[in-house]
Length: 108
Image (cartoon, rainbow, N blue to C red; front, side):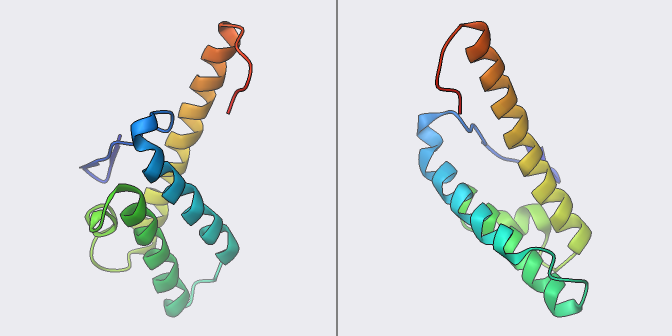
């Protein structure tokens, strides 16, 4: 997948990506605890830093800045976060559909 011109290997159902997946899911829990922290400059910085950390722990140190830039462009960070979530949803839907067509149980 590509986000903001950066190619990322986000294979949610690949066992070789298991560590990245675990880190990603853990960070999603942390982000969900933040909720909407507002539009004050400090809140925006916190959200951007949290999104960057999500990319860093999932794909490797420095990925957050590659994807979201070095500053705190709130729109850029939120769009990157949304793109990653949408890719997860897309892969999960494809996975469920294939397993259903094959008559397999235990969808994720």
